[in-house]
Image 1 (cartoon, rainbow, N blue to C red):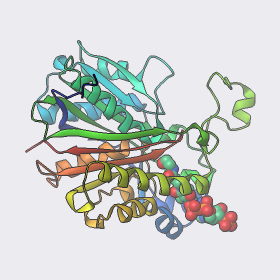
Image 2: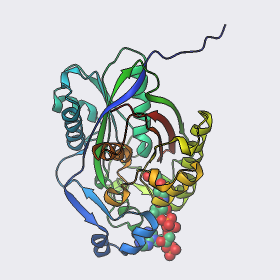
Image 3: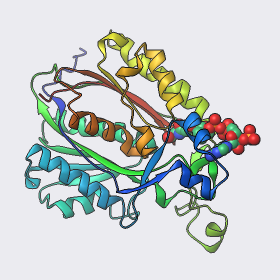
Length: 336
Ligand code: UT7
């Protein structure tokens, strides 16, 4: 007989934390290094500024974001069970960035790992963390989205350098027996047919580092912007509308859409498709650009800090990124 699985716990976000570096690169700066204009960047992407980490690595930003989270929630690092870091710019291939964060914050009892899903990394990691909580074995899971995109961006390529920025943000997941709060559902997809549209081909086992890979600029991110745009605008909207339908909801039931911040035009198309007005869309792309795995948690952390979220708010998180990877998630905010 088929038994329907009934969850005993939901994973609830019980705190947020964030870190963005101090150094700001505005659009005017890009006018001085590539053939572009402030006007082009603003109208084609919505970006006005992005943050750049001058010294240090992804783990340094992730550590600061988690320290902010620990302070905001009054959490003892020794009570953390697991740390998941979503990133495509780990400090090194190994050890995992999560290990470095674990050591930096003194989370002596935690295990952890990195998760690579590009701009969908935080969504994938949040679902993974939720699974750990729902299983009942782990009580405090920290999920981080962190990327130092400036370490893989080619600042001679006007098509990509204007888009990306650096940043990190984190959430704490804990169990709730009240299933009306927390993560209810997600739709997560990966489609490797997009492998040649957004990637970094140098440095891995396919193209180990060599003079040739450096000469061919293979250690930089490559994006076929137009191709990615077309798929992103369709898939992010589809999957966001689908999660509403699947759960018998409409845009009116949603307090906020929390989209990956890649391009304001993609975000607008997604909101329109869901029937969500622009005042219910979390936006900070103008300040930070595309911080890859950090965009969604940075939105959550900022809106939370500014008191714009209230307990019971229904949120839809949505992302699209390299892989291709994409997805949406439905959750109810559980913090007073
Ligand atoms: O985050 C993960 C997933 N990534 C995304 O979702 C990003 C998806 N793609 C995009 O957001 C957009 O495609 C871009 C912002 C990357 C580019 O915008 P676009 O409107 O799609 O521009 P395009 O690539 O179609 O290029 C249009 C024109 C081209 O000139 P020609 O060939 O028509 O003469 C480009 O060379 O704009 C030119 N162009 C620029 N002009 C001034 C490209 N980049 C720039 C620039 N400044 N920075």
